[in-house]
Length: 338
Ligand SMILES: [Zn+2]
Ligand SMILES: [Zn+2]
Image 1 (cartoon, rainbow, N blue to C red):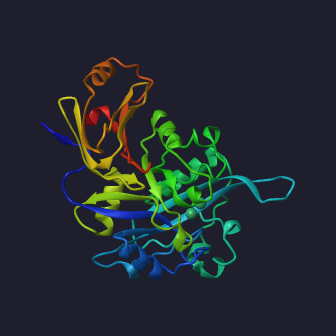
Image 2 (image 1 turned 30 degrees about the vertical axis):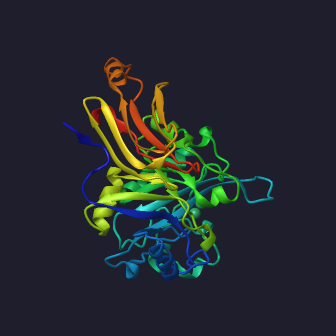
Image 3 (image 1 turned 135 degrees about the vertical axis):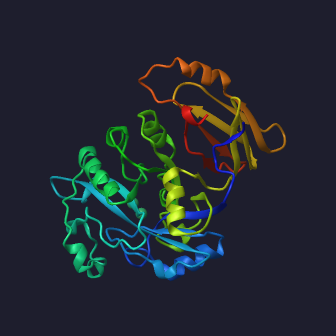
C-alpha cells in the first residue's frame, strides 16, 4: 500500500521561521513584517527577536499566524578583550504555547541595550547563566524542551562553528541548511551540519530561513508546513512531527513509498537527489527538459539495512535542485517509515 512520507492531506502553509523586528535589531515593525510576508503568499512568521520572548498574537488572524519565539546566543569570549567573541551558538526557541512570555534560560548579560526596556518584570525573575560549549548548550536545550519549546540550531557558518562545536548537540528539533542573511553576506550554510547530526542519530529536521533584519533580507529561505488548519497548536504539532520541507524555491508535491519504490512529484527541477546515512546515494537528472517526478528504487538499500550494524541509524532523505541552483530539502525518513 502506498504510504505518504510527506502528508497528502491538509494545506501547505509557507513559513519564515527566523525574523527580527524593531523589538530587537530589525528594521521592520511586527505589523510591517506581517504585511510584507502576507503579500508574498506567506501564512506564518516566527518572531525570533534576540534575547526576548514576546508573543505577537495580536497579529494572528484567519490568514496569518505569528509564532512566539526568540533567538538566544551562547558566546565564546576572547580572554584578552578585543572583538567580543570568536564563536557563538545561536539557537531559536519556538514556543508550543502561543501565550508564553517567559523563557527560563534568559541571561540578562546578553540582552541588547535596545531590548532591555522591553523585558518584563516576570522575565527578570528567571535568570540563567549561559556559557559556551556543547555541554552547556545541551543543558539549556533540555530545559527549554521541558518548558515546551522546539529548538533550532542557526547559521553554523556565520557562527564560525564546525563539527567540533555542533557534533555533540542533543535534542535539537531543527538545523538551518539555509539562512538568507548568511547567504547575502557571503557566508552560506549548507546541509552538512544537518546530515552530520542525522548520522549521529539525532532526529533533526531541515530548515531554510530568512533571519531577516531588513526588507532586503526577506523572501529567501522558507519552509512549507502541511497541516489541517492555520491554527497555533495544529501548526506546532505539524512542525514537531516534521510535516514540512525546507526550500529556497523548488516545491515537493508528493513523497511516497510503495514496495520499496519512492515516488516524488515536484516543481520543475534539474535534479532529484537521494542520500542515506552511508555511502549509498543517487540522483535522477533532467535530460533536456526539467523533470517533475521520479521513481527511486530503494529495495536493495532496504534489504541491505535489514542486516545492518546496530551502530548506525539508517535514513533516507531527498533534495531538489532547480535550473537556478535553488534547493529544497526533505526531512530524513527512518527505516520504520519506509
Ligand atoms: Zn543568529
Ligand atoms: Zn537571527
